[in-house]
Image (tube, rainbow, N blue to C red; front, side, top):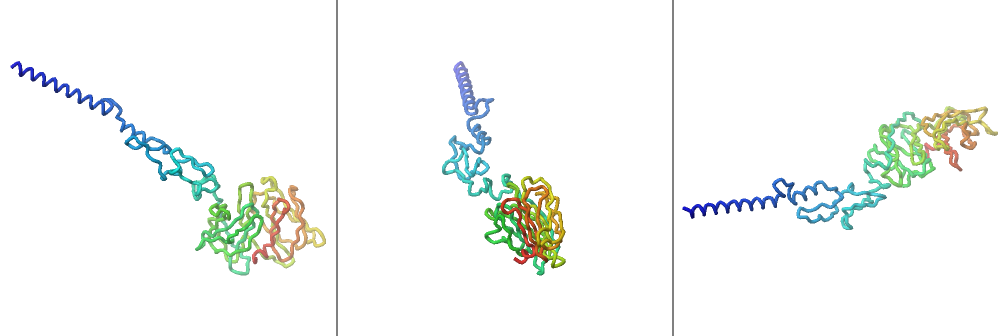
Length: 337
């Protein structure tokens, strides 16, 4: 009887010891009964909350090897160079091939390159003898340009490989009539759009001149309905366009054409304006043929002598930069060049 009790007590004590050892083993594996988890749980949490620029860790505690799958937005790019703490020599990503002026090319969210100015234009005044609609470009900017018919059946550069060089006038080229769209691009960097016409509606036999001007880094494009005929062969039509800032682009002043010299057009004094660099409305005036002197009421340019031949239409473009203060465009001849 006593032996049975002793054996029972010994069995009970042994069971308690085994239960206590089991509790200790569970506590050691789980960080304690009220613990926060073991090493495996902490490793997983670290991997989920780490910055993308820090190498991830494998679940076995080793550092994951850098790969070429690093995303561009995980890096800081300055001047086209990539600096990423997680990239090794084998795993670094070179983003310079996709950069334009330090920013990703073709990225609609690119904030370092100005977005193109969006315009709409309609020319319904026929002035040409042929039914074809034509445009030309007078480029007074410092950038070589080209024009793309984006709304045509086939998008193409209208002015060939060379484009329109700075301070030059292009030839007149045919465009699709009624409802195309145009992109004016930097000819040296074709992906850079300077201005865009989402609607460029030009009727048959119309002639349009795009005047490109520049104020610092800002370039804009003014579309003008261009005429080519006068009401009489002894008369001329002329308009004055300010394409240069003339020092202060905010200054508004009047340009004056006064008949002078032995080949004067008679007692004629015509004012154009007042206008400033930001002006976009330029109208023709019909006057007698002959020699005229162009002056500026704000004295920003030297007086210019101009000769106009009857039966022609002219655009006088005021640049203000020496030595070519004024560019005289014969619109009648430009339409057939």
